[in-house]
Length: 219
Image (spheres, rainbow, N blue to C red):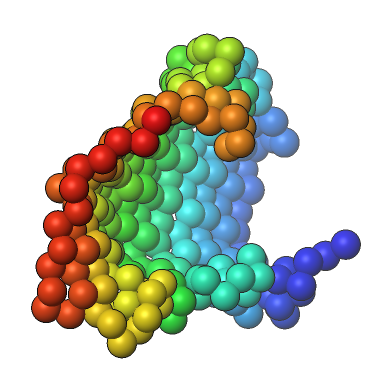
């Protein structure tokens, strides 16, 4: 069945080109819908093993909230490029570079987000950098699929998250948090994860009051 989010597209207008065969082609498309616009380009080659691909998509005021049937997000604008080869973890060599110019989160616009990732030799490395007045973080992580139980390592520098402005905590309390988080975890599923999480230099700010949180470890 078609989801309600897809039904809300209402109409789709597509103009583009297709050059090549079904297993080796270049295509581009300008897509306009009732929920936003996209511009796509894709090169795909299934005549070689593993398959290769190189694609870019730009999206302008795409209403992901309606598409995904969630109230958390609204309009999003940005650009993403995916280039690589292989579609299975054991043979993938793929890189994602994306920029989110703006995204609505619970009615508040968050801007300047960079999401990058690379999967090679069964290891995924990724980063999220956001420099916004209410959401300022620098996140780097690694997932290693070479072991029977995947290994997760990440570090996050939370320069500032304004919980009140983002409607996560009481809107009139002006609550902000900051700190550094490091994690080393192992596990196949979320329920089976085990390891160590460290938080340092954490602060909780409410209005003009600053509270320093002692460093702590979770094992």
